[in-house]
Length: 124
Image (cartoon, rainbow, N blue to C red; front, side):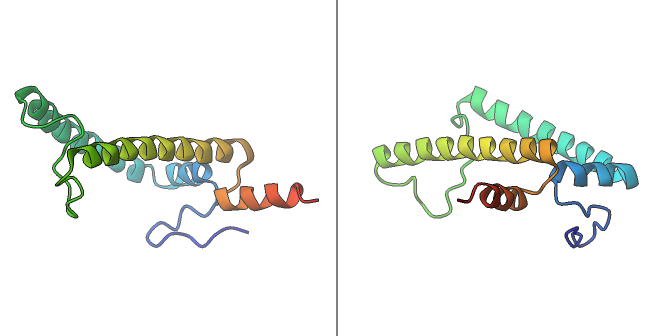
């Protein structure tokens, strides 16, 4: 059975992310085109700002000044450890997302559905 569609996006009813993408592409390609245009514009503007800030020495790579809870204030050794953990966790999250997309392409199941099916198939 299909999942209930996302509000405002009744075209995507399949559980697999890649299948839902192609459903939207086939019914409303203008949504995909608008999304790609917006992403291109945002990346171009932020890329110019980020590159000029690094070249001028105003900031380090990856430093966008976002520290609302003040974790980076105080002990520099602790701040460096937190920054290394953030990079490691970000890389792990990218691998997890790639895994979900890859399994969706191979078996056309959603992530939770594939996990439960795998657990059920391998129970003793």
